[in-house]
Length: 40
Image (cartoon, rainbow, N blue to C red; front, side, top):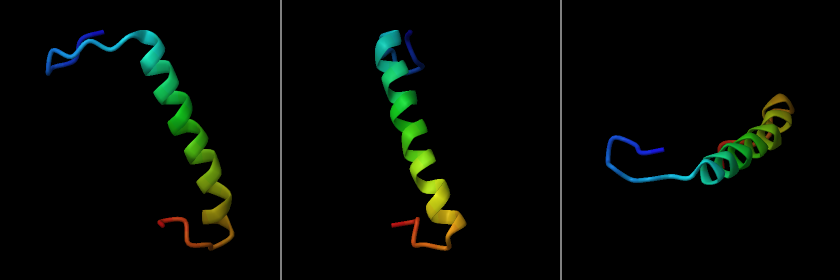
């Protein structure tokens, strides 16, 4: 997949990044619910 800057990303790279970001979100949700400092 080529983006608007003509950088070619493989589907595997995109998949890995989506998984990483999803995992980060699932880690932050309980912190936010418990009023912990989740912005740090």
